[in-house]
Length: 392
Image (cartoon, helix red, strand yellow):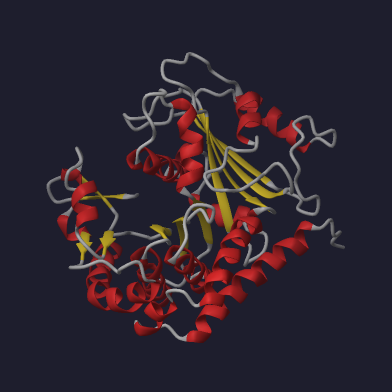
């Protein structure tokens, strides 16, 4: 369960909210309509932010608030009958989301090394974001690489592109709307396995999607996005076709070229199960009715399941469709997402812009090049597997 029962018989989310300074938690949690659902002990803040510096977040911020985080995490852990997975939602553009989350993952690796750790990471868009956000991102992606089982990536620019067409022309998506989409992904991933017949247990996500231990960066997509008051309802085939179209991802992943390694599909609503299996057959059929490219050397590259309960949408969502589909996929072009970031990072590394900030907060010079090499090695491995190599 993702909720724990209190002594009064109410339920509180089994979650910790952590930030180096209090304004984010105060503005988002304490002013929300459901603030009474949260326990104050699990809202942990410091006195000042990490100043947009990975090193400060990893060392200074961690020293200030990690003991409190560890204490509250142990409390939550002791109240669990059995912990199955730990999920961390963070942004790697800032100092706390990148540096402190690295320190936290190191701590979790020590005390719960046998528990899956799933990351939901907001990365910067290299076409828009520059400066320390790029450095923070590369250092975080590289140094947390051995500390998690799977990482779903998002970026704000891609989410805005997905949301803008469904909003009225006089209204544009706000940060609250942008945060809504990753929260909907997390909500769908929290469905108890009893509602899917064990087919979509969140413990199985990493095992189904990750074909090689270092190729574990995946993308999320959600459909449908319909304009307000739209009465259009799609069947399983039409919705599956839409979610595999280019431009549906929550990050800057281009699916118009390359191929999928694996895909995980969760249908919600009053779908006909037979139509879902027919749709899968059309994807797998040699004739490629849907023209979706998968790597041929992976024998079972699609996992799917059905939840009869319709999606519970946030009230701000423009159109609350009775049917929806969530796709989590591992694609060969994911390396190109980080290639763009590495290109910007290399320019900053050559000019040594801002690096003195990191050095003054405890970052060693060799770590900058090691982080770059780690990402490049992963991208090279993806490029090698992207070729049509036949495994015998």
